[in-house]
Image (tube, rainbow, N blue to C red; front, side, top):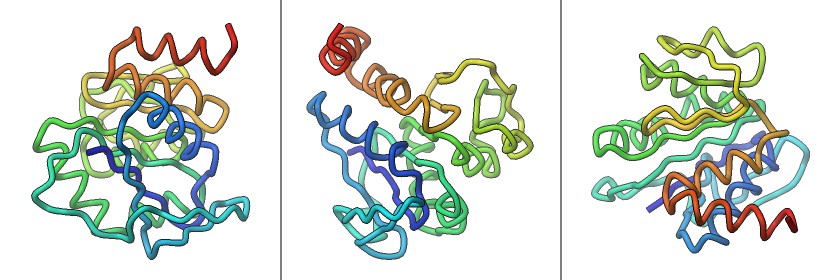
Length: 179
C-alpha cells in the first residue's frame, strides 16, 4: 500500500500531481487526512481524503509520501500517526518520499542520515545528517526528496520509477507531456 498524508495547509500541486501520476501508473494510493477527511490546501482547494488519520499498524506500506506546503508540513510533523507510519515504513524497508518543506519531517526523525536530499530553500537546516544535493529531485536508496511545487511532475515520475520501473515512468512522461 502507498499512503499519502494530507494536512490542512498542504501544497495542492505537490500532492495531486504525484497522486495522479501514481494512479495513472496503476498503483493503489490511499490519501490519509491528518485531522479529518476534508483537508484544505494552502490555496483554499478542499480535498476529501480516502481515510481519516488512521493507519492499519499491520499494513506493509510500500511508500509513504509527504507533500509540503505551510502550515501543512508543520501539521505532518506534529502528527503521531505520520510519525508511526514513517517508523513502520522505514522498519519494513519501504520508500519514504517528501517534497518542498516536508523533507524536514524526515530529517528531524533521522531518516536522512547519510543520504543525499533536497528541500525547498530555507529548510536545509532540518535535513539532519543529509548532504544537501543540487538536483531538483533526489533518490538515495529508499528515500526520495524534491525541491518544491515546480518539480511536482518530476517528483511524481520518480515515485513511479521507484515502484514500477524507469520504463513505465518514461512511458507516462511521454503520455502526459505529449512527447
